[in-house]
Image (tube, rainbow, N blue to C red; front, top):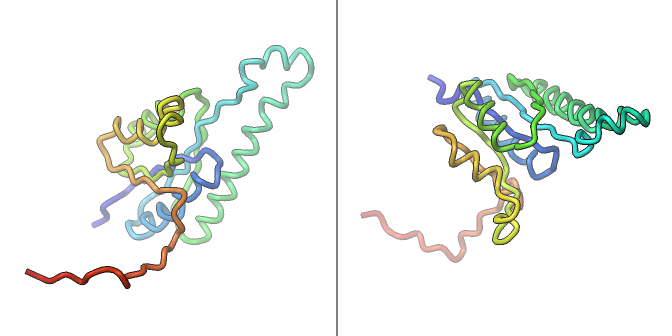
Length: 166
């Protein structure tokens, strides 16, 4: 019996966020689960759409979104070639955490795998943490992947005591 059936992977297009995909794909394959690559899109140019339309620059608003769509399609196709059941989804919205949470709940997902950008201190306080908000708001497991750690770390056990069984 599979533990997970639907896994959501929020992606912001950064290499950091993509680190979660490898982990999620492995879990999806092990559980015969569906993987959903999710992006919350908000263009800073969207607020100027009317002005841009008047100056015949409306295509600028859609260019970023089209690039993200192509990125998700390429990632989806690569995962499909590895045998992963996967689809992509783009949401238009301003608040990534809020949109991710609502999407996960609406999809009935049972696992979220995402990368934390590793902000600490003042940066985390000022900008918040999408990962932290998602974790605190959902009642399903959220697997956070630390982006600064190598995929596979060679384990050096030379200074570890083996301890004893009791």
